[in-house]
Image (cartoon, rainbow, N blue to C red; front, side):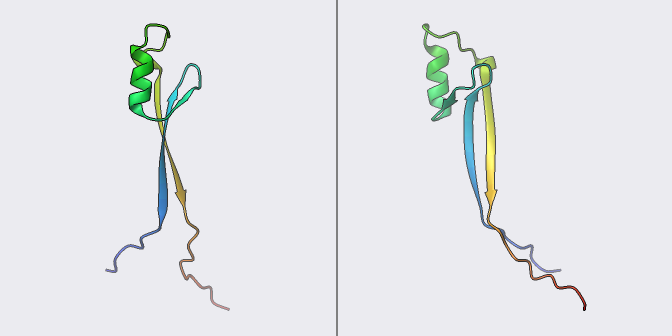
Length: 65
């Protein structure tokens, strides 16, 4: 059995407040907002998405003529 093909990809983590839609630089930035008594942000507002961008790859498949 041959080794699987490795496809180059880039992953980007997105930390967001699911109630307000605010995007944070990091999880620590979100935690700071939760700890701030001047905001109504709670831990339940946490949303984490992962955006994966895959490079276009030609797999070399051919059809018969």
